[in-house]
Amino acid sequence: GADGARSKVAADIGLPYEGAMDIAGSMNITFKADIEPYVGHRPSVLYWVIQPGANVGGIGAGLVRMV
Image (cartoon, rainbow, N blue to C red; front, side, top):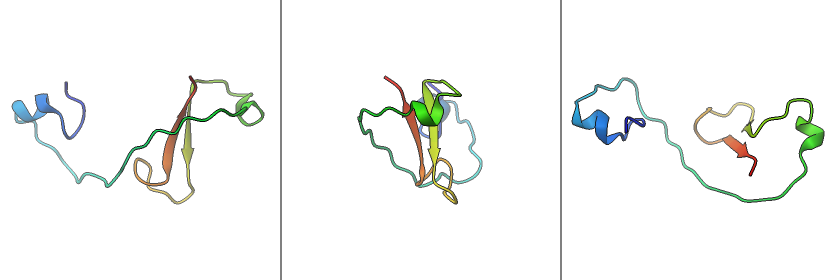
């Protein structure tokens, strides 16, 4: 239940927060692609995609999940 800055559990017990929340959004895009040429040497089910100079966790960062 303590799942980040909007956690009901953390709010109910008065857990203090430090820092400012980042502006971020979320979207899901489903696509089919053979990315083996790019990641075949490091197989996984999750890959981060980050735009150089982007604020990680905000705009410019994403996660590719294999389904």
